[in-house]
Length: 316
Image (cartoon, rainbow, N blue to C red; front, side):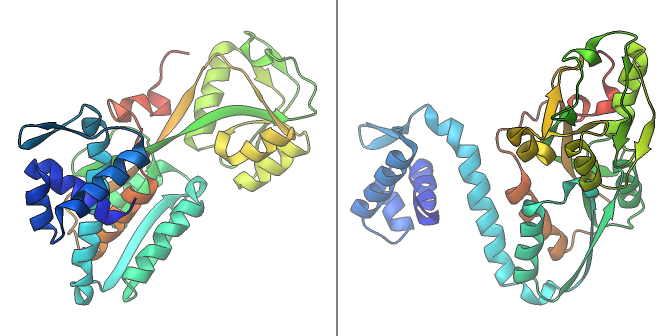
């Protein structure tokens, strides 16, 4: 499957027959048929049913169409930017949470610099979503990739990208009862460690422990997620962390996950902009790159802000 296949599929869907699609794409009907057959084989489903002279899309088309449109729209936008190279100049200020630094974010920056080499890209990290929210509101940042902290008044706009599961983690060799954090008024003989005690996940989990009357040795702020992981691997303390950050250590047994009364908790990730800020070609380009690279297509978008904001959760 390639981009041409998707373009021909969209053309057949819009025109309702192979002939019109072949004329639109300057190819033969047999070529159109070849591409549709390849796409059907790739997906393992039938896409069209013949009804007289026209083709009727099957039910599965409505399921895959949104994703295909995203791909085609992103490509179309990037093609347009080829002819606007002179407009891709100036400085672009992008903010992001420290915990969101990963290969995908690096890929966004690499793609952007390749397309817009004449734009000075200034990437600024922040420890909290509230700090990023304030800077976007004041137009100190052109946009931000941030965790959801809720309450985004006008003129701020948000675009849901994904969500990150949070888990309670301890060292793999720590001797602790499996349900220790589900027992009201329990005493945990370990310190709580965090990269940033003022961050959303830490405040959220500490509030939860307080409501259950669960006490522990003390609180320690260690400055980075790498430091937290190192301490956990050495069986020191417990932490409320992003599961993805310790996935390898969980698989190897260096870190283990303990259950809580919170159940499954996800923290939302979103693209944040200010509607009053001028949308330059550079801002539009990196926005599209962020969405095409970081967005989870299977993300449930309904009530995203309320559902993935930790501090708005009232029931445990």
